[in-house]
Length: 316
Image 1 (cartoon, rainbow, N blue to C red):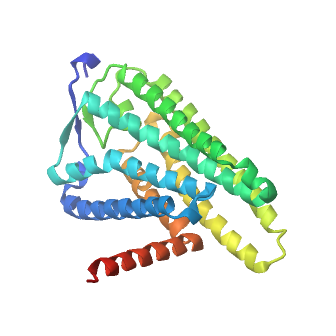
Image 2 (spheres, rainbow, N blue to C red):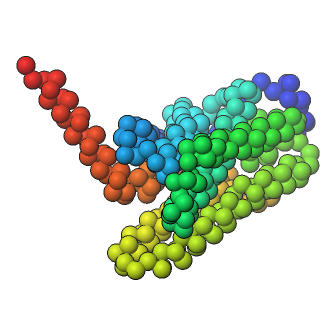
Image 3 (spheres, rainbow, N blue to C red):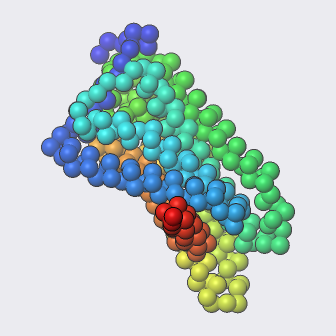
């Protein structure tokens, strides 16, 4: 194919799930349902945490931030995928594609760092309980969250600027504007870009996941020293569910980014991408919040307040 300058490219074509066009209606219903359910769950979690004073602690502060990230992360690509399922191949402007890629990387990397910050918070809460409130003060928590957004911005900008500064030899993107499908459209030798992606992934995915595993190993060793069997069981249940979600998130991200372009498979990458961007954000509020007794209590209080307000507003 003849290379074309970026200045000549005005629009890309998003192919979506063209290979299973006969399943588009079913996929649309399933994905739309999951999207709405996830948006609702994360929105409810964020509102309850912000509205209940008993939940204004570091752990719930991070959980609220996770809900915000999940809402944004989902909304970067799912609406376009739904549109694609409805009408087939759709166009996206060069600027729109670059923005989609940037925000997808921005929110994804920010979530990687936020999950690491949350594991650090749990590590401090369990292993350094007496100093926890001093160490994890409001300034530290806000600084950690700000750091996640700074890292997400840096990775998103670097990948997006480098990718869109190179000449493209094709315009048909086999999914959406994400780095692997776009690498396949670049002209010439893409090895430097591939190495760049893998190096960043090793730092932002593998490195952070190892830190998280280390934190939970220390947490578990501390739990084992507890005298109460009931406390041990409760703590193990919480830790295992957290590690499960993090393994799913980092595992799918690793399988997407820690491999050369020659091993890319469009159909496999689409499934991994959906798992990474749809399933995990749905599991987060279930695992981190709705199984939590304090969160259940806050939900109950909010529901009772709503009922009381409705009764008072209806009474003469």
